[in-house]
Amino acid sequence: MLIVPERDIADLMTREAAFDAVEQVFAAMASGDAYNFPVVREAIGHEDALYGFKGGFDRAGLTLGLKAGGYWPNNLEKRGLINHQSTVFLFDPDTGMVKAMVGGNLLTALRTAAASSVSIRHLARDDAKVIGMVGAGHQATFQLRAALEQRKFEKVIGWNYHPEMLPNIEKVAAEAGVPFEAVDLPGMQEADVIVSITSAFSPSLMADHVSPGCHVACMGTDTKGKQEVEAALLARATVFTDEVAQSVSIGEAQHAVAEGLIAQADIAQLGAVINGTNPGRVSADQITLFDGTGVGLQDLAVAASVVDLAVEKGIAIEVDF
Ligand code: NAD
Image (cartoon, rainbow, N blue to C red):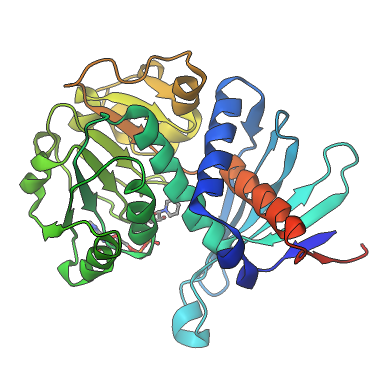
């Protein structure tokens, strides 16, 4: 069995490798070669923790496994540890034997940023110049860093519920040499691409804050009840997702579907666009929206990729098991 500890991930995993792994697994999901298992998420009644499993099997990439972990809200204050904790386990699909154990914390941020990047690559207008960020927390920095590589962006605009956090994303823009401007929500009309990544339970971005031709990646809503954008925006947009079942139950589309504004059948898999079986964006003034709910197969794909890189560099720890 191979072990790739959390401490080694930053030096091993690249944004490019994460992008390729996520793009491939989205394609495999859409062609029926890969599927996610039902998600388990439990309040365990200890330390206020939420713990669960996300797993799946990719027959094309021969990746089988699960990510185990969750959210321990007291970690930072009590122990100086980060609150989100996860570990990925990979199994040999031929034998069922455990293959690898991989730190999942940084990988989660990289695979989530890769998902919105894949959506921007395939759905945003080629001439997109202005990217808008709604959110400025931990994930937002990863999102912006990866998104900036997808088009020749000339400006970043940002809004955050807690304005004091905006310097987090301003710093990422500065590192990429792109000017940053803080805006109010109607100011998002200037954006050609908007990435939304907040933990909100009520919408910030309204349908009339988004201009025709914009691509919106909604990345924060991954739980029943959360909501980042007005449901009416999904009715105005052509909606894509990682997995339709998650989109309508725990994703941003849960609200538009519940309100009868769109139907499940209106939502397409991003993988179908990657595979060429869905045309994706068909006009310059169409609004496209990606509902990125986060699937277990994304975690397995980046974990398998990082194991390959660790083996290549001779730093994977091998143990008899
Ligand atoms: P964080 O705590 O670092 O940041 C939270 C962000 O939400 C901040 O920008 C904060 O200002 C904003 N926010 C908080 N309350 C708000 C409100 N009422 N209205 C508007 N904005 C508000 O969290 P993070 O680690 O950056 O995670 C952000 C979200 O992304 C979480 O909901 C998390 O569950 C989700 N997430 C999704 C995926 C996925 O695959 N889709 C993966 C990882 C995390």
